[in-house]
Image: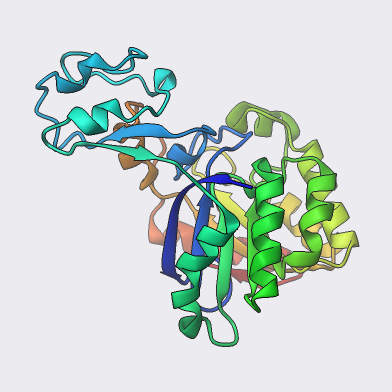
Length: 292
């Protein structure tokens, strides 16, 4: 049993309770236009190129898939992750994002972090979308629980319900993304409507899962009363939702987009005063705490 991940990052304090180690799964069925981990969208390994290191020497232009040009051009959609560009680049400007690992190999990297977990911390499965690799996600979460490690799964919710049902016994908490309330607007900005997502959220809550609703707020997209009312309605009708995490847009994903040869996402970072106003408006509507 192997899965594809991009990274294992220790000492995270924003992906669940306590100090956590986050495992980033590769592959996602959605294409959120503001994605801050664009390198996790495609399922297979991909080359990423640091523009600041590239001297346009053309050494990588021998790419067999034609993803690399002689003057530093890069078309990540054609990359097959063969690693030839990494081997040939004299400036170490290229790297491969995505590696095959077994649950046991992931556990071996996590075990040294256990003293920092104490009673509240643990491991968070994130990405990408853990449910995009359901067998690996279940195997890893089961192994973690066998070793007494608290498991959080962050999910966009767009997966078959049976995958959630399989992993449910091994997950202590779900960080469930609720991106846009209007189904058609959701399709426009993510590539799919939210009907399956809402159905899975309702089933998770009906199963008694511990759920935190994570709500990215993007200026000009979902920073409006209709969406805020939609979030509030979920907190009032689904009692398993313990809190709402408001996630204001940030532009950190644009550096990674550049490394993938993609243009910037075009969104603007909101001012701190705007973010505080969003939180106050949401808190006035919601039946649970709203946190930043």
